[in-house]
Image (cartoon, rainbow, N blue to C red; front, side):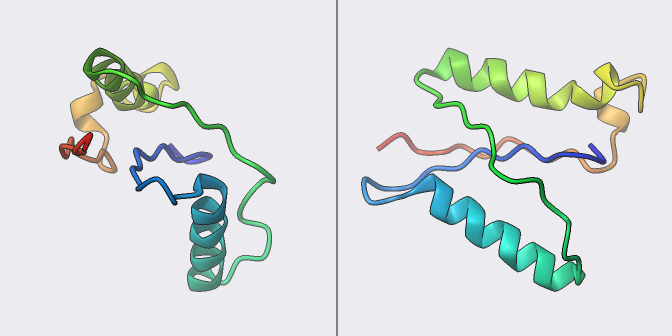
Length: 88
């Protein structure tokens, strides 16, 4: 999508999502030399089951279709791929 990004992220018990997102935003802003690249804050959703993971992946995959950017999600050139996130 041209105006937002979806990420599936996993960390250990010391992982602080807000710190990680802040670091990602800073690094990308520096790399792209953009001062106003990001809006403040972010929205997160904790995935608690395999069904939830699959449901959210389908939602993310179909985002460009809902936005009218492509007719089929397979045609979106920036689509990621499913990589198993171990639930340890």
